[in-house]
Length: 276
Image (cartoon, rainbow, N blue to C red; front, side):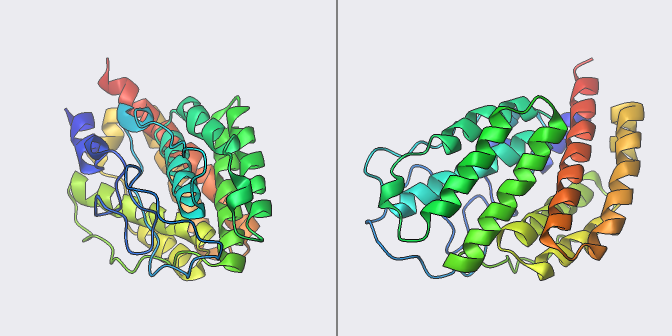
């Protein structure tokens, strides 16, 4: 029952969600089924905020399909697909099911229509595709997590040079004591860390790190997952304590990868405990 409640808290039944919303924020890619925008050969203006999605914990993580744009799609439509595929990859790793990241990673690695991209975009997309192949070839959660973090850095490098989203201005959820309060706050905070890599934004990274360090795991959740969850919680506390000190993007990516592995291990233990 508590596992089901946790899944509901994190919006697992809503598909691709934004943190605190089921629709992307201004300037983010349109929903996967929206009509493709008209082709443009210029880089888009930076968005007003970055879309942020909750990290799933339950078995819903692998049920969404990769986004494969049709031939002749516009640059905007291609970026929409890359956004969706990166989201699915991250959801799978955080959920403790890195094997489910293989399908969206393969879709990203095989994305076509690169000739339609504006000048200067293609090297960044090709780098993303190389990283996506590392995810499809991963044989462990740590390998998949490291590649996912590197994917975020690659996105950030492109955004820094070519324009992209800005960090979300959404305030953190209230710091309550209930399961829903704690986990929604963790979702919000981990999204700020992701923005720290992908926007990139030091301010977002710091906000996420500070929120995580002041929001402990609910005792009932750790009890549900047993010794594995309690061990992961200790690792998590150690990592978030280091997060504010990481100033270089490479250091942040390495720490983010460790957090993904820790979150995934805890979530997997909770889910397995819930099926017994």
